[in-house]
Structures are given as C-alpha cells and as structure tokens.
Length: 162
Image (cartoon, rainbow, N blue to C red; front, side, top):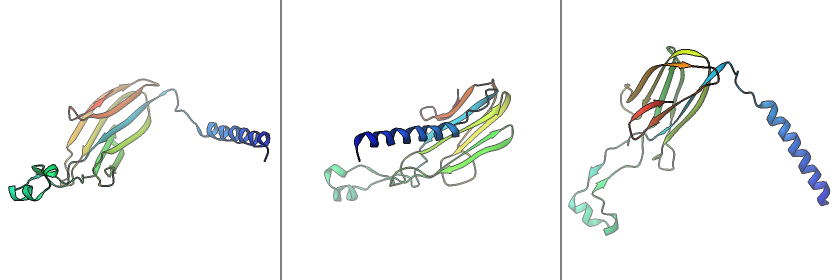
C-alpha cells in the first residue's frame, strides 16, 4: 500500500477515534462538588515476624542471616466511606504483587451537592475481627466545583481531608 494512502487512513482513523472519545466524556455538573477517595495502604502481615534461633541462623548462608523471619503476605484492605449516614463506597482490595506483599490501592470519585455534609471514612488492614483500625469522622462544607480529596498518611497513621 502506498505511503500516502496509508497516511490518509491513519489520519481518518484518528479523527474517528477522537470523535468517539469526545462523545463519552461527560464532566460533572458545575453546581456540584467532587469528592475523591485516593489512597494506597499495605495491609498488616498475615503472620507476625519470629526471631530465628542460633541453629537456624548457622544453617543459612552468611548473606541470608537476618535475625527475623517474616512472611511477605499481607491482609486485604477494606475501606468504607459514608456520606450523610449512607454508605456510598465499601470495597476490599487484595494486596498487589506476586507474593501478595504490596499495597492495596483505592481511587474513586463522587459528584455531590454543594453544602454541609457528614463524612465518615473507615479502614481495616487486618483479617481478624470486625473493628476498623482507622476511622475519621468529620463535617465538611463543600462549594460548587470544589474537589475534596480523602487520603491516608502512612507517616501519621491517619486519614486526611484536603
């Protein structure tokens, strides 16, 4: 196929694709605010680390003689978000990685009416029990077109709202 015809077909395909992309894009109503939940968090280890005995350490190669033996596998993480007393998001995400030792990542957005709202976000990062390990409950005042971000600070060990 001649280069000119191939180039013309490529350009035509790009125009058609751009038309489809535009038809599916729908921004939220400018009178609404946007809540974004965006966080990554590693669940707790499924097994606690244990101290190796002297005999165990002696059997290992010198470069493998770590005093603690730790399982890599982590628990899935559960995150729930309530808005004005109603649960609008509840999801459990398995840890990333081949050994299930990575972080569980969450990202979702909600368009909500501007005004005062009660916001509660909870997270459980272990497999035992029904209690949540991290809880944040607050009133927020949203204005139209505002983007409110909910995240989690690993350094401080709590949720933040910006």
